[in-house]
Image (tube, rainbow, N blue to C red; front, side):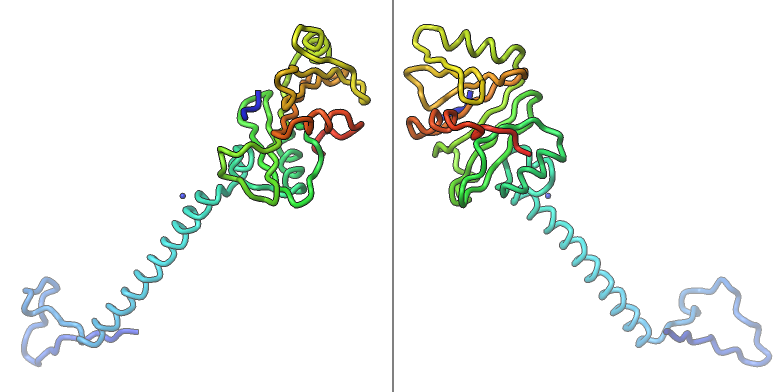
Length: 218
């Protein structure tokens, strides 16, 4: 139920008549590189280290931003990304999901939650706002895998305290008299039940009554 990351090396001088130094020299006898060469080498190393730090920070910054913004395909099905209508359709198609919604709403964006097999939610964000708002209630459509959804919904509609009927789309619809903000639809010929929630009384029912309004995201 819908709830309300180059150098030069100095060669040791060899004096005539004197033996050439052994390859293994005392530290004091070892050739000493020109100070200027050392300076150049140090600067090159410093530049390299700076460049490396920049690259590392760049990658780290990208991952951090992606995390904060909920970037990545997985975030798109975890309700962490505000999607346009086309982006929603693209994700649904890419993930091969069966998802119902109430069609696009002017100026709205959408979140998609599909982390549990057989359960998918589309949440409407009027004006594109409300992504991180967990207190305000927004329109949401739930799609549930449900065997014999049509018959189950029809039976529920006949229960005391509920209202049931067959919609213009030929689906079985019911809702509780005390909770008309949540309307359930048993899709004819499919093992799918859809829940339409809207915080404004009668809005959910109004959507269900319009032929073709509750449809697949495709």
